[in-house]
Length: 203
Image (tube, rainbow, N blue to C red; front, side, top):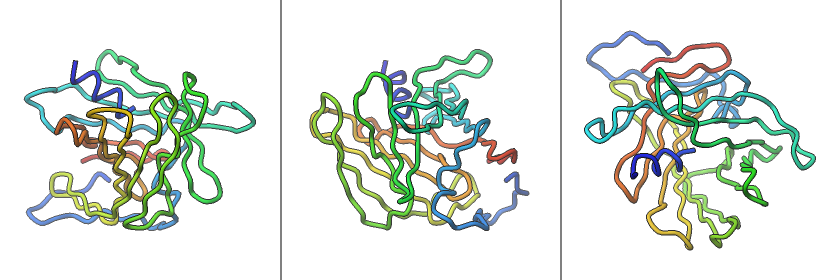
């Protein structure tokens, strides 16, 4: 049950040598932290394979007009040969780089990410039925194997009206989603490969 709940919340092919490999995007525009184009996809593996060896995925599948806004539809779930879809969410980015996420079961949008945000930024937004969600941002370096991702943006979420929901989603420039981690449960998922704007990136 923990695995299913964890996955629900989480709703450059390079030569390898013995030294770290830096992966940096030529385009440092903040919106590269969340590249939304139909067909973009991310496939993750568990950070603790002893507990869960299933692959987790996210994929941009369509654009949808809702409430006078155009959103990108992102499905997420787990499975390799057979996909099990756990969540469908709708993302839009405004001119300030604020990312708003809408789920059909909710009446309000979640301002989960601020793509132009700086290290130490913090904000909150109302969350249906649970009071207030609090987000804090840290700029960090993430290693996936020997590959080094600089200036990643890690968004930590804490909801006052929920227990064991503390969760961090990390975005990397030119890639988007690279890590999702349950701080409460001590496990999560890290990127294995992605397809971004027609380019395949492997780790």
